[in-house]
Image (cartoon, rainbow, N blue to C red; front, side, top):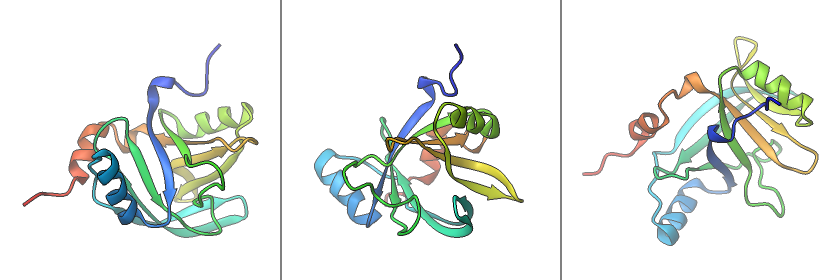
Length: 157
């Protein structure tokens, strides 16, 4: 049996938070996490109710296993679940559209995806009826995740 995803491609756990900077500080104080800079992008995203440009803000922990903190955006999939701290499990994939289709066939309907030139690109979110959300990310966007994290780490003086 072939699976839509590979367990070895799981590279982060995403948590939606109301204040990224406060949570970076909190998780550093409690567990010693080190962080990338907080990144931001206004990105066209297709949601179940249409396309919108959303102000995405996020940061990754530098040490594995990686945590991605994502700034809450009310009225979108980027809101924290009432009783579930983990927002999503992030997997790399080699073919975003094919993997997305296979996840839908496996019972994980498409919830949201980034749009570039009118086509699905960069990432897609799939949400199963029980609330487990999977993010698939085009591997070519970050072919060397460790190098990507180093490039986003703050410089210390």
